[in-house]
Image (cartoon, rainbow, N blue to C red; front, side, top):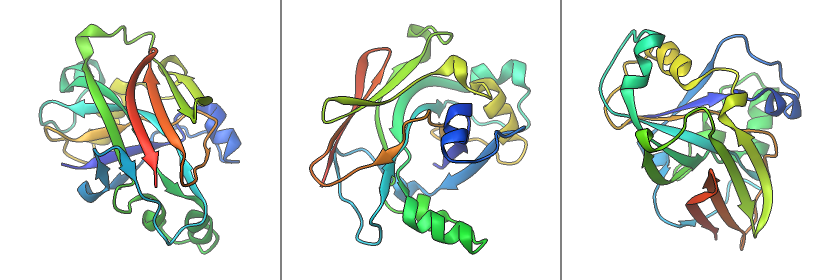
Length: 201
């Protein structure tokens, strides 16, 4: 199982990160050790600026490579929410030196996921995600605002990396990313249904 993360897939988030809006999907990988299914997340001691990035997550249901976009919807059957935790201070250091920044994104437990919902029960044209921190809304977004659709992402990524059953694709985060601290409670909602709860320790 691998975790494929899409960067800058909402224009507003690209702007808040002072980055160009991409003309093709940008993706990076997290190892399976990044996956966290427990409700407790412990801030690692190597960062002083850990940020939340709530994302819609697709669960791949069958293997495929060089998938054509018109057939991509057949390759996932569940949708959920996840958080792409980012050590923003480490990321900034790596970027300044022109170095890869996996250590800021791919560390252990950096990809918590919540419950998944069968795709056929959802209206894929109306998927709204929201993150609440201590009961206050911090992020809100809608899948219709994605620069690259779910099917486009699956098709694009599969040109480079074979997708396998159980792989997860984090589809990008909307604007509103920000820091978390010990004691915070993060709650992720999809169309108003809570799918993810995380206690920051």
